[in-house]
Amino acid sequence: MINESERYAFEAQEAIPNRRRSGRIMRRLAQCNIVNGNYAVAAKYLRMLQKSLFYAKWADQQMRFIGNDKAVNRDAEYGRLRDLRIKKTDYLFSDREMDQMLGLLLVDNRKYNNRMAYDYLIAYELLQRDLRKFMKYYPLGKYLKFDHIPNSTQQILIGLWIQRHGSLDGLPYSVDLQNVQSTRAFLSVYMTNKQSAELNSPPLSTNVWRYVLLGSPGKTTKQEMKEIY
Image (cartoon, rainbow, N blue to C red; front, side, top):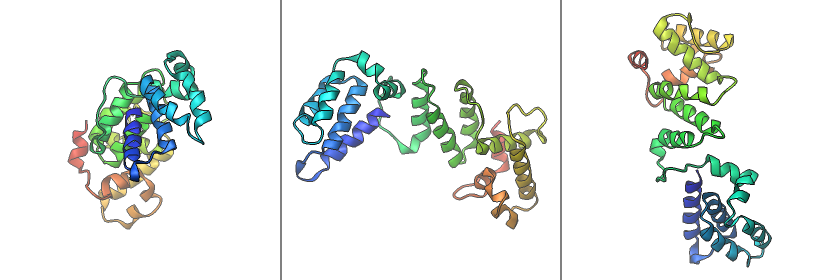
């Protein structure tokens, strides 16, 4: 999120007492503007850094990127960040709409298949216990060519399939036997006695359904799980 990095750096710079300037922050501002192709602004920061004690040599080296898209695209760091950044839409970051922020980051990148954005998106929905959105976004993973499904995600998929079908017959996901056994054991005890002490100690407490169903704040009801599909 290059634009957010630039905003935070700029605000940190402006918050320094006595209007002093930080070479480290100015360096980050120059880098963000190079990645975004704002070469005139980047050059302004680099010229100031060329007069500094600790960043002069670095600034001299960075001047080769000014106005040179080919050099930026070939650079291992800048080139990758230029591809991963959000290109079509600029926005003010909202921590209350994290899934939308991560979704934009994921959709706006094709070349590198931004797996990290997808990982954070899925993890965020699980942490929010929003299984409806989890099932909405999970299928996007097929475009990223993952070679395995994380254990926590496997457990959620297994539990939801059992809730709907009553068995694992026809389960379309590649899951481990250990996760199948763990999830079945947890749900069996939970459906029998939601107050059972077994749910709060290993091995049942290590299953992600313990967090989804018994964690605080908020709970996911059986009716909500049925409506996910």
